[in-house]
Image 1 (tube, one colour):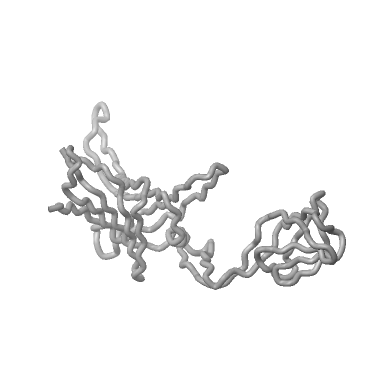
Image 2: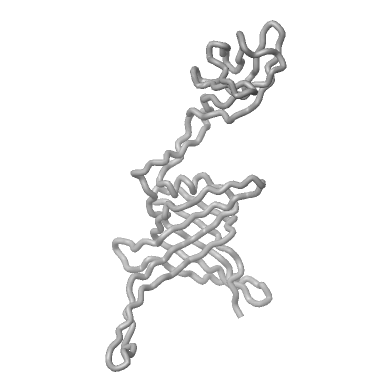
Length: 244
């Protein structure tokens, strides 16, 4: 008796030579769908035959880890490394000092992007403070010990920042897809590697980013559809490799 009891290991090989891989899938499914047209006739409209066409193969994978390179692939983009501009998230600070009242921020705000509110929801005008690198010095309106809400500001990111553009005119391109699992016997002894090879599979581009207030790892979805090569009717292979 043979069993398939392990999730796939996934490998994607781009025509440019880039390789994407995952050994941490939570699930991996290959769906084969064939269109069937029934031919009926005669008394009782009996079934005379079945005509087959349109074999579609789709692959659905869910990864337990977040993979930034896979996201880029789904968007049809490459990851660009270089400095950029990011937004600081809201954070409360306590003004300190005697003659000079100030707060210090973790990043240096870009000019005219800093937004500060007082605890009562009143906007602190830009004329009420000066900015020097990461230090904000209040000239009026804020006293020592008072809490202020720095809603946001923009700051320059490091040269190691990785960016993916989301372009509505660009979509994912095809890649070679290899999926591998194990065939075992009823004693859980590995017998064969089962490897599915598809010459061209294109990411659907459909995915969701989900978060929740309870801290937990969120699985990443990655779906593909297998394409027919231009020069062949063979769209893939299944290999059964003995383990000796």
